[in-house]
Image (cartoon, rainbow over the protein chains, first blue to last red):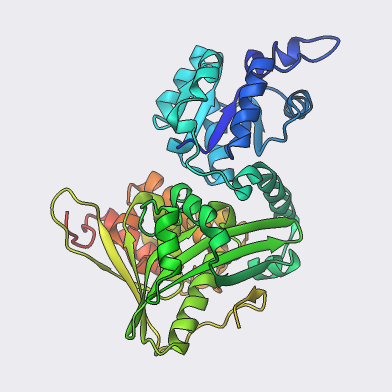
Length: 344
Length: 92
C-alpha cells in the first residue's frame, strides 16, 4: 500500500521549469493536480523532492492549492531527498511512490531504493486506479492525515529550537494521551490502523471491522484505544491494543500505533497503563506475542524499554520469526505520566 | 579497539539524540528513557546506522536489546561481534 507520493516539480507537477521562468513561475499541471487531490483525499500523503530553491515548494503549494506533508528542495540526489522524506514522515520505502519526468532521476531512485514505486508523470492518471493506491478504509483521520503531518512539521521545528528533555518538551506541547475502551464508532479506524501500521504493529495481520466488533462484545477481551492531542493539534485515535484478559496473565494479541505518534510517549504510556491495569485486575504478567521483522524495530525497542523480555518461539522452516515479550507484574511498575488520562 | 569504537558510538548517539551528553556521560549511563532519553524512534535510527556502518544487525540478533542498556554494553557487544564472535544462536 502506498502511503506517500513524492513529486518532482519541474515538468512534472509544474508545467515548466521553475528557475527558467522569467516573469512568472510555471502553473501547476491540471491533470496531475487532480490526481494529487484525489490521492490526498484517500489519505495518501503528498510530498515534494525537487532540484530547486525552497521557494519552489512554496510556489507549488500555492499553484496546486495543496499543503504538502514534507518538502525537500536542494541539489543533492533524489534518492537522498526521498530517504529524508521517508524518515521525516515515518514511512518505509515500499509505501512510497516517486514521480519524476527525468528518466535519469527515476533510474537513480530505483537503483538506490529498489522498494520505492518509481513512476513517470504519464503513469499517474492510470496509477491512481491501481490497488496500491486504493485505500482499504478511509476514515476521518485518514482524510485529515495531510493536515496532521503539517502539525507535526511545526512540532518538530519547535522541538529543534527547544533545549530541555523529551518529557519537558512533551509537557510544553501540552501533550494529552487518553486511553479508553473502544466503542462501535471506533471500528473503521481500528481496521484502518491494522492495515496501515507496520513499524508499531505486533502481528502484522489485518483485522476486519467485523472481527473488531466481535472482540468488543467478547467478555474475555478488552480493546483499549489511545487518543493523542497537543497544542499543535488533535491527532485523534492513534493506537490500540486487543487484550485477552485471562485470570493468570493478560495477553496482547494485537498492539498497534500510528507512526505519526512516534517519539511522543504514546506507546510507553499504553504499555505502562496495560501493566498497571493488568495488576489491578489480579494478573501476574503481561505477554505480547510479536513478529520479529526489520520493520517493527521501533515497537520492539519500546517493549524492551518498558521492561519486557523476549523469548523466541520455535518455528517450522519457512515460517515467520516470532517471539513472546513478557513482563512480570510483581516488580515495581512505572507510574503513568500526569499527561495520560485513563478510564476511571 | 573498544576505546575508539566507544568514541564513535558516543558521537553517533549525540547525533541521534541531538544532545551533547552522550559525548562525556559515564559508560554505564542507560541509553533508553530516563538515561540519555533514547526513544523508540531514536533507537531505530541508532540501530539502522550501526547496521550500515558495522554490518551488525542488533535488532535481528539481540531481541531483548540488552546491548542497548548503556554506552558500555553497546560498545562491548559491537566489539565482540566485530572481533569475530558470532551473535547469539537463534533458530534459522
